[in-house]
Image (cartoon, rainbow, N blue to C red; front, side):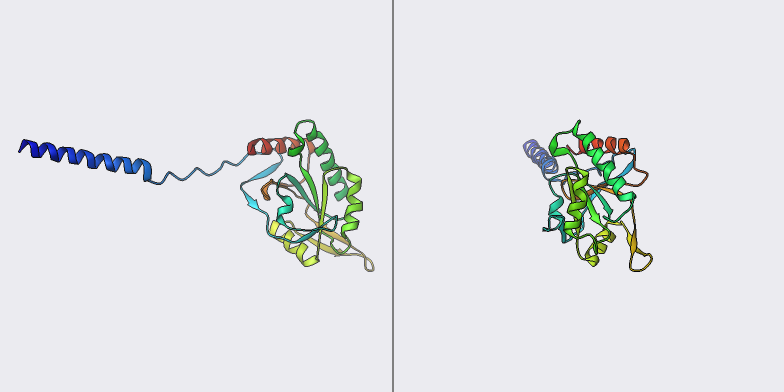
Length: 213
């Protein structure tokens, strides 16, 4: 009788051990905690980052490109146009100076590219973009395409623009002055609304790059 009790206890112990081992090795792990958003001085970090929508546009060198053109490097994206009298050239010059300032603190592979996405594709042909961007220094790319494709891309990113008729056939373009930061995975990682202060953008960019390492 005593032997039967002992055997039963041993079997019960083995069964309990099996349950514990099964729970330890085979129970699903707890879900990971959601990523913490980075606190920025001048912008809003997206957590998690938002993938770029699919698109097919023309680069300033005439090459047809899609989302993969943004992979492999950080990119500051601004919607503007070559006939813009003040705001666009001032913003692009600021971004050029920002890139130069970052060059003193980062390796070349961590420097941001700067993308001008045309809000005036009817006039901003690839050659027009190439000639315009040549005056702002290294690291610039331009993107244009069919008006419908450009509107679709801008709408998907929440960056509106519209034509404003003027005298005769002339027109201006009313557009957002937001700057988007796209990470090397072709995802929108942060959004910067005006007023744009170069030193604050620099601090935020360094913080985001450091957090992504």
